[in-house]
Amino acid sequence: MDAVTNGLDRALNTSVNALEKTLFFSIGGLPLVILWLLVGATYFTLRMGLINIRAFRHAIAVTLGRYDDPNEPGEVNHFQAIATALSATVGLGNIAGVAIGIQLGGPGAVVWMTLAGFLGMSSKFVECTLAQQYRTVRPDGTIAGGPMYYLSHGLDKLGLPSLGRWLAFAFALLCAIGALGGGNMFQANQTQAAIAQIFPLIDQYPWIYGLLLTAMVGVVIVGGIQRIGTVAGTIVPTMAGLYVLSGVWVIVANLPAVPGAIALITREAFSPQAIEGGMIAVMVQGLRRGLFSNSAGVGSAAIAHAATRTKEPVREGIVASLEPFIDTIVICNLTALVCVVTNAYQTAPDAALGFELVAIAFGQAVSGFSIMLTVAVCLFAFSTIISWGYYGEQCWRYLTGDRWLAAYRVVYVAATFVGTVTQPSAVLAFSDMMLFAIAIPNLLGCMLLSNQVAAALKDYWQRLQTGQMPIHGIKI
Image (cartoon, rainbow, N blue to C red; front, side, top):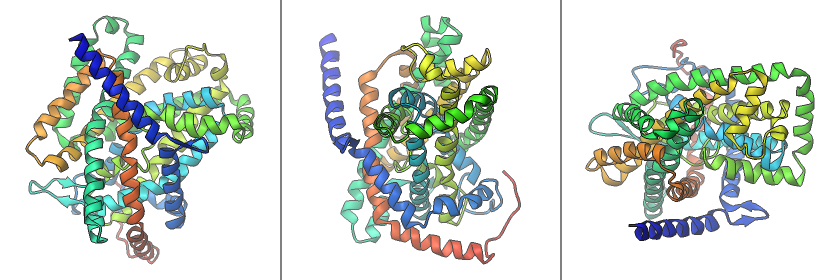
């Protein structure tokens, strides 16, 4: 048995190394996959006429429910859709990933992280608009949408049916398998480690926590996108709000150090160390565990936004553009500023990496804040698990229909338990590589379909500016 296990481990590590060499092949010091995401985000920002700036106010109004119509087709409202998508991104990447980036690249890494988030708003707009344009309604009334559908149907419309089918198949397969590791087992493993800091007994009996978490995940996932949206719509605003307020508290407590921290971040942004740490360490090493900070360009969030109740695809794309702003420009920058104003990134022990560094920074301000941070991270991770469960399930249904849906759910829920009681490093690394890889077919398809999005945006914006959009009142 040991020989078989060792053989599988060697095979997985070989595959991981091969994927890493391909995806992270450097051009001018910048990994190929990161360069691909940045080029795509920059192109979309210019092609859509700075949609990330000019539609910002409208995005907030839509999210607050000003344009919601309960009679429109879909399963969740705009707020629940963005909460579901945010629940899959807000968490370890915004906390541990940022801390790792600062440790490896210095405070200047924050500037590059912010730029990536700003440009990523346009990528989110494009992919989520396409998800709405090419979504379908299944016989049972549920919505099917996401990159699998706009890659296959959209490229077929352009006269590229074979390319579309292959890109859709690659995306669905990589996402369905990758969700088991980076979106599930890693999150479960990290919550177990975090809870064990408060309750050391969990370290001795991890299976107890594993069974509890697995049961919670199973109950939510069986309920589908509507239950996931309801749970995410409660957890994400509550914990994000609590985390932001706590961060602001720490910053206010260290207010005299804020001007110096901002000056330090700005000054070091263009040093060679900051460029390497910001673009590579933050976005690759740190945000790898959180599937980047906002998944812009990866396409996963488009699966959730496809289910929104609306007849206006562009409107949902505009709502989705808020996600990189919230989880990268706001939460990641808040995390970074807390680490810098408390000087924790320099004074913390060398062994304190990622989450531990942020916990030290919070703990220096007010005793007990580190416990709050642990609870927040656990809830963020839980919401990530259930959201990725939906993403993986939708991709699996695209590949197999409904024949093996129950089997995928069983495997996914079981993976939650495995993640809490083991350290499946090779499996996690392999699945993480798959989740990076899905950005390649997704962005290629989005670029080819970008003219359709631009035309739809022009029409929508004209109708909005001339007062042709009905307003249904503010309600969430």
